[in-house]
Structure formats: C-alpha cells, structure tokens
Amino acid sequence: MSDQRPDGPQPRGGILMGRPFGVPVYVTPSWFVVAGLITWLFGGRLADVLPELGYTRYLVALSFAVAFYGSVLVHELAHTLVGLHYKLGVRRIQLQFLGGISEIEKEAETPGREFWLAFVGPLLSLVLGGGFWLAMRAVELESVPGVLLAGLMVSNLVVAAFNLLPGLPLDGGRLLRAAVWKLTGSPMRGTVAAVWAGRALAVAVLIGLPMISASRSGVDQTTGEALLDGVLAAILAFIIWNGAGNSLRNARLKQVLPELSVRALARRSIDVTADTPLGEALRRAHEAQAGAIVVVDSGGAAIAVVKEAAVSAVPEHRRPWVAVSAVSRDLEPGLRIPVDLAGEQILDALRRAPATEYLVVRPDGSAYGVLALTDLERRLTAALTGR
Image 1 (spheres, rainbow, N blue to C red):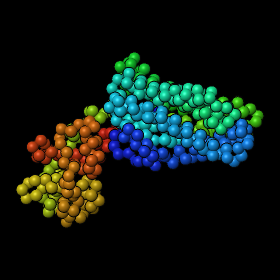
Image 2 (image 1 turned 45 degrees about the horizontal axis):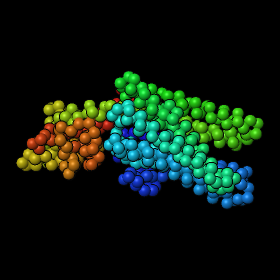
Image 3 (image 1 turned 135 degrees about the horizontal axis):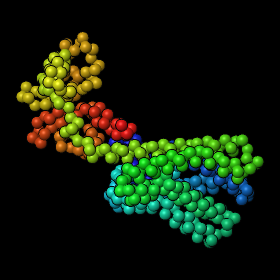
Image 4 (image 1 turned 90 degrees about the vertical axis):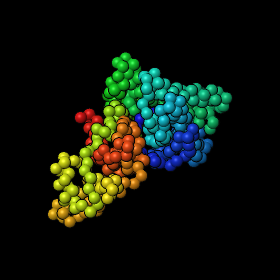
C-alpha cells in the first residue's frame, strides 16, 4: 500500500531496520502486536497439522510471521522503486498493523503513472504467491517447509486481493482514482471518488467481516472468537476510514500549495530600534496598519523580528516599560526568506529553520515584510477542511 503524506517534518515512526535504495524502513510497535497475534493463531493451526512439533510450533509460527512481513516489505519496495523511477521521492517505508506503507512525497503527474505506482505492489504480491506455489510442489506438504510455503502463498494472495479493493488508502483505491482521473481529467475528482469508496469499504469491513466469520464458524464459534473478530474488524475499519480521510486532506493540501506565495502571505511591517518601548512600537504599527514589527540597528539593518506570542504574553499595563528587544528573536540563518518563494518552496524553507516569524526580503536584501507561521497554518487548515 502506498500513501501520500503532507509536507513537513514527520516522526521517525519506529525502529529503523535499514535503508534499501536509500529509503529508511521502520517497524512500528504495532507490528510486534500483530506478529505475536499471527504467531499465536498460526501456532494453533500447526497443532492440528503437525502435532509432533509440540511447543516448537510457535517458533515455526514466528518464522512465518517474519517471512510474511518480509513479503509485505517486498510489496512496499515495489511501490518505492516505481516512485523513485518517476522521481516522486519516497520519505520512508513503515511496517505496521495494516501491513506496510510507502510514504510517497509527491503526486503522480499523470493517471497512467498513478496506475502503475498503485498496481505494482499487488502485482508483486501475486508474483510472490505464484512463486511460493511453485516452491510447494518441490516439498512434502505435511512438513514444516510445506506448511510455511502454503501459508506464505495464501497470505500473499490475500494481501494482493485486499489491496486491490477499490477504496483509499488501499492500492485499489489509487487504481480507482487513476481511472476517474483519466475519465474526468480531474485528479481531485478521482480522489474524492476513491475516498468515498474507501469509507464505504470501511463500513463493509466493520459489518461484513464478523458476519462472514460467524457464518463460516457456525455454532462452533466461541464468544471469545466472536469478540476477537469484532475487535479486529473495528480496528481494520478504523484504519481504512482514517486513511481515506487523510488521503482527502493530503490531496487538498497538494491542490492549494501551488497557490501559496510568500508575497501574498507576508504582513506589512514597521521598523523600530531595540530600545523602543513595546507599547510605542504597537502604537506605531497600529497607525501604519502593519501586522508585524522588525527590530533594526542604528544603520537601519534588520536584526530581529518581534514575536507575536511573546507580545501577547506581556500584560497591557507593562508594555510601556518593556523594550521590544525583550520580545524579539534575532534573525539567525534561515529566518530571512525571499519574497518570491511559492508553493512547496515555502515549506522547504520553513522546515530548514523552524520559527514563528520570518523576515521576508526582496532580491536586494531589503525588508518586504514578515511571514507569520500562524497565517500559513490558517491558510492550510482552511484548505484541509475544505472551507
């Protein structure tokens, strides 16, 4: 399963296992929970098939869990290689509860590329399933290798079939998105269609999986088994529903990013010296209808920017006695940004030097205004909520 994440710093996301093709692979804590569950369930099945194993069956089951997630990693690496081939960038791969996620940084430029980016993962899972089926023919089925190969064949076919279901955040949802995009010429319409399909799929999983499990088990299903099926269905449905919503928010973010520009977001500013009382500086800013204050030296060169949050923390009655230098941040490297920055360039600049205010400068180095992080966040939030 592949996924797009919003630009900005992301948490590491687990234990670093390696960097194939330069892309970090992390295992999240939820993987250990699922690996333990797989070991318990598969080990119980082995007691019926190979009773002579005794408690050793749980070691065999654990090896199956590890091999299964190895197959999931291969599935995600397929997405990664296509993403790198199309120069979309891959931030990282995560192995987690639902299987795996390849975090693709950029959107595919055409529906055809979107199709291949999504389809290559399930395709490789099908190939792996076929490979394990061929390997099964060379071993005794009622043996440890035979049982492991059979389990890996079935699990890879299930992974392929599940990921081909038509709803985001699954690969099938991206295939649906590519198809609607191709038909309508609008990637956003494709995303919306795939998101609603994903939400419908989440509801179907929540209701359908327990019903299917109950019908197959019949009267032999215990209360504990029914409860476990219900919990797993609820978790899976929540992940699909939440993933569909994230896909829509990310698509909206990608849509609005090209429209953002520092020139349009920058606030008008006034210049004051460091020893100017805060109250006087605010009065001047109000008269000039400016939304920001820049601190300059005796030669008129900008040296700091007044922090809005720090100003709010100073009681009004104390502002005539507090110098602006006390509520300012020095202009360290990275806190001067060009006025012509736009789109993802803005986020790249802000990631390199995190701050709440930035001095916006013209090509000649003179001050144009101040970019407040709150203004950018407000604009992005409006885009993500569809307002």
